[in-house]
Image (cartoon, rainbow, N blue to C red; front, side):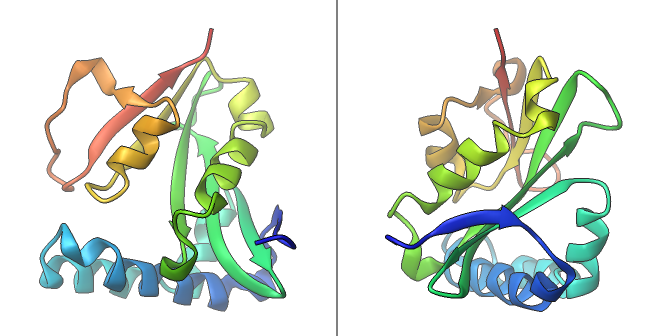
Length: 159
């Protein structure tokens, strides 16, 4: 990871990002969710979906030796000026635990959408929960229950 750099997504990245997300869901998330649910999710993670999300967020990729090894995005929370949300944070399974996710979240937290927000929310998977808690996110309104999308709602309030 010595040559890792984080940059904004380009249209040329959409296919690689789509493949990265699908691979990560199939390998990393399947331990915490049913395979059926994960395959439903995989169907939605097309290059078109990536570009659609990038159209209203600031979408970043982590690249190492020319390969995309992680991604993440930040955008307004339901269009609000003072609240933002993190999306699509994925790190290639063989690169997890090496600081890639931390570097992505730290980049997102320096983005203008983060700097203007008093609150940042993240819909966290069961798989991602310990990581986001380590990054300083806590249960929204103290609610530690999983919602109907099988996600935890976490948030960080900026002082």
